[in-house]
Length: 268
DNA sequence: CGCGTTTGACCGGCGC
DNA sequence: GCGCCGGTCAAACGCG
Image 1 (tube, rainbow, N blue to C red):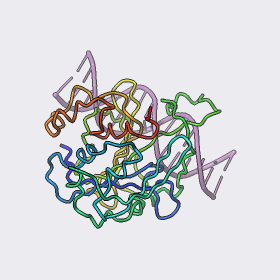
Image 2 (image 1 turned 120 degrees about the vertical axis):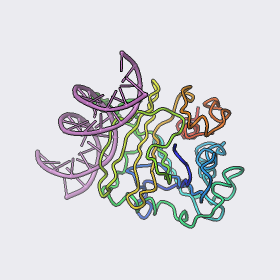
Image 3 (image 1 turned 30 degrees about the horizontal axis):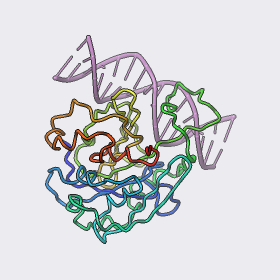
């Protein structure tokens, strides 16, 4: 169902005061991949990720937009560190090349686009407090009694701008919607999903760009600490070869989850 | 009946 | 201190 027809991976600096505001409040990075009009086949999203066999720091490479297309700004907000890199993506290797093979002019500048899309609303660029240990579930409303000493640390976020008609992109995991809010300055609501797997705290937000309704912005937060659920949706199972879906979590990045697992703070 | 969605209320952070 | 706003909870509801 989710047709990753055009994927825009766009790495952007999220805490950038200027033109580089991330669309979200504090998205770590936005990846925008533009795969011209690729067949809804397996190319694109997954493939893209599939080729990312490196650590988070290298994601930019993986998502490296089309050659010469642009620079990729990537900002990672880990515990206390905030890094920003500028990578001139050139070689993405294999399949991805096809995905991003099309130098999309639109990709050129980093977050400016993303910024334009959503940032307007975020007048208060939420400068997310430097690291705050999410501690797993500090976000619950109930635990107001959070240890005052430490602020909740936000998990690294990872945003994808996907051109799709469906809001909820299938990524192999099972998600449960737990909330929806109207987005300021946007006629489209933002949906909040949580991985249904027990003890998995991964969350994701899905919203549509109000500038380009055809673009869905999916923001992942956290890393899956489990393999893909066995109960895969038919669509996914059919869309992706089993080999791609049954990797060991730490084996090699094939999917968003794999990707997430390579987040900075996931390094073991 | 179990699971997922909907939706209004609540909470905490932040800016003024 | 107050109000706004993003994020989350949880009861009600729907669906297979």
